[in-house]
Length: 110
Image 1 (tube, rainbow, N blue to C red):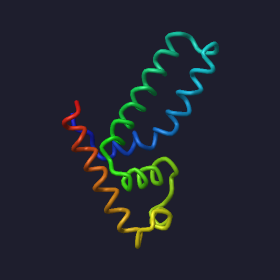
Image 2 (image 1 turned 135 degrees about the vertical axis):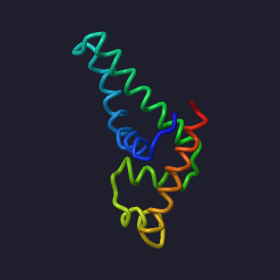
Image 3 (image 1 turned 135 degrees about the horizontal axis):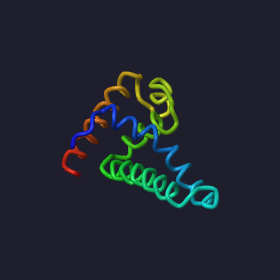
C-alpha cells in the first residue's frame, strides 16, 4: 500500500496530539470503558509507531525540518531561519524530498 504525500502529512500533523492523548489515556483509564480504551490505545499507538518508524530512515537535518513543520507548525520562512537555510523555497524542496523518501520507504515497509 502506497501512502500519498497528503496522508503522510496528516500522520505527521497528528503525531504530537497522538503522543499527548496516548499519555493522557494511561492516566485517565477509570473514565473510559475498557473497549474504548483499547480502541484509543490501538489507534494512537499505531500512529505513533508508524511515525517513529519513518523518523528512523531520515537524516538529522530532515528530522529537524519535519519537527519544525509538522510538530511545531512553523511556516517555511520561520523554518529557514531556525534551520539556517538561505530561503523558504529551499525548505519547500527539502520537505518534498523528505515526503518522497517516506513514501518510498512505506512502499517497501508493508
